[in-house]
Length: 390
Image (cartoon, rainbow, N blue to C red; front, side, top):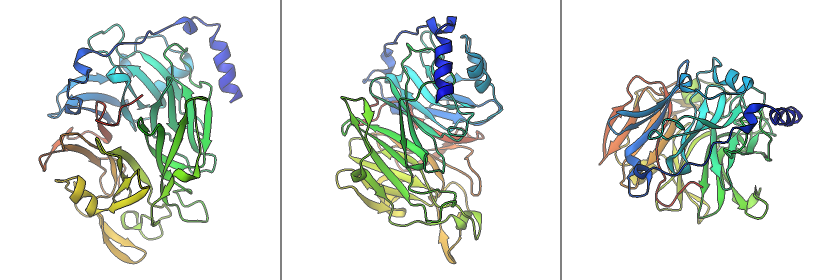
């Protein structure tokens, strides 16, 4: 914390601190009349990683590679950008489409998306280096009101959880910006989503260490953190903690005696409904926000909400606690549902951590795009009806 503060002070006296990137107005093609769920943003693992925005046919209309960066960066930010990490763990639509946020190499970053204005396109407006004991495995982030940004630490210890930063473009770039709020207690966070109607940040993780290092089982857990407009802070409230009904190790995939518990991966709202679908290592679950109840599980979820879902690879079965299981929905690293009923998903290969294409389902028919890319997440590039970003 002290290091981050001192780094911030030092930058006040450097030329980079005077750089101000003004807010950018949404381009006409990104306004509400445009159907944003026809555009998809995908993160491709590699050295270096790649972000790309493409249509439903896979035709790319915008991409980001670290060599695209032309702005002056602080040395430690540049070092994290050009690290050997191949991560493209998260990619998200932000600021009415004028920004993209996510995890790229060893950075959590927010940058401009203004392809119609090359002078501002791909300029970083917020950076955070993950090369430390707290953030090294950070998987996800989400914008909050007031130019704030929530980052899940995705760790296994009791002090892991969510860090909140001021991500205003008016601030100087730095590798370790000051932490405004530290919310501990939820481990292995893989999904964050802002709820404008409920004025809450929702997070998906586990209540104990997913890697089995705690002496108790780890349950997949969804937590809501109410937003206090007066203080500008998130609030921990035990009334909004929702555990899955069972905890299971992921032995079917990784073998007998494997220590890890099934954890949550993506937390996805259903357009125009107060419901989430959440994926975990073993399958899918539906959650009703109004009742605070998990309402459907596994094949009942796909039958009701994801007509046309198909398992992408064979052999997704094995023994868990001596019981044979078929797990066709296992390892959905990301999925998104559009208001027109179409949906996309990325399912990792069995006993692997990522997939090698994006599945797109339209009118119950699945086809593959991004074939051959090593992918963790593909998402619709746009606000979903009833779930706007701040």
